[in-house]
Length: 460
Image 1 (tube, rainbow, N blue to C red):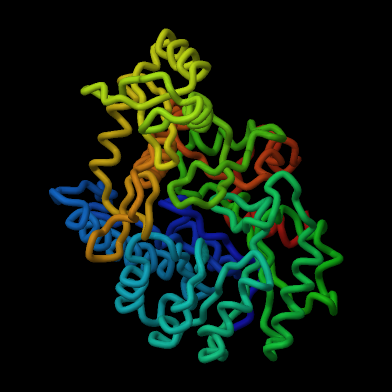
Image 2 (image 1 turned 30 degrees about the vertical axis):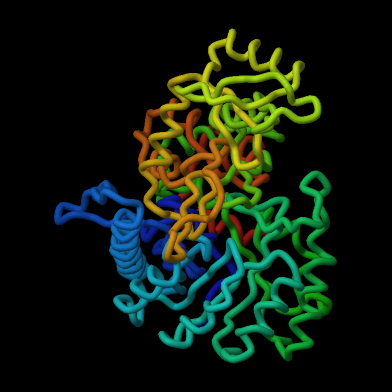
């Protein structure tokens, strides 16, 4: 089957689903539904709220996996029905999500002949090829460098070369959601994707992957802007993945309030941050949610459990006012924050204190207690899916947040709920501000998926 080299990027919790993926495939491309805690439905077609009843984090983790499998199956079947057998249907998972292997395995066991491929990023998914081989589907690892792909190939992928459908290169400075910036790369100094793509292709050719396509993702808005990459012998076969633009379609599942916010963004409104409980950088709209997290970390001082050096001024922490030691200037800052209402000091894993209001302290504590293990490792709650302790060996970090809670909240907000847009994590790519100036979206026009793909095929 011939398909268009246009791929819908899979986006997190319920931001791309079976409806959007099905229409993308129906229009001749690769539709991608998110298999990250996807929605499932009752007999009347209503979304089943993901409510947790387990008393422990491990019990809630098992509930989350059951929800995720049921939701992924529901979205795959919906995509297939809408596509009418056209295009291709891919499932997108995050390797660092809780129970990733169990979830994608559970979905593929019940969607044989429906899901054509698996895309996977956010980590180093070594076992992705093994899962693909078990179900005879293609796999598409998401990487941000040739070095990352080389490590995956040498460790595992060489054994299942025939099912490697393509390699997704996701630009770590421009993509929305979590970004694959390494410790050696400066988040403030974006690099051109061209030499990085050339280096990736060189690595692939060393492994005999001359004809395996690279799928360019992150910062892709219009094909006219990528003419130098198409039919370029240095890069070889290439396709393009669109993550941000599919958010603004009639079939996109995000609330109308989110869509209208996208139409009003300005350059600089999407920023890189490192508050995610995954520890990765991520790109999101700079709203009140991010501003509160930023301010939380700015109200931060180092402490010592004992009087040492300049840390000689005693300060009581918590309900029992257990003593720690601050420097005299930091004590003055702490007293100033207390005067502004930030009276609760919370310890971080880095031997610092942050200062928040009593209400925010209660919210942070409740979210940590209610952890359902949505990540393989979570720095916010200190959860780890690895037995026997099921914790990551560090203190829970109050500078982060419950990502499952906020992504569920924004994805399922009411169409007129502006507060939800201000007070939750709103992932977006760095080109999202272009909705406001691209003439295709004049006067608030929101296209269907079919209209968007027709537009993309013009190069615009």
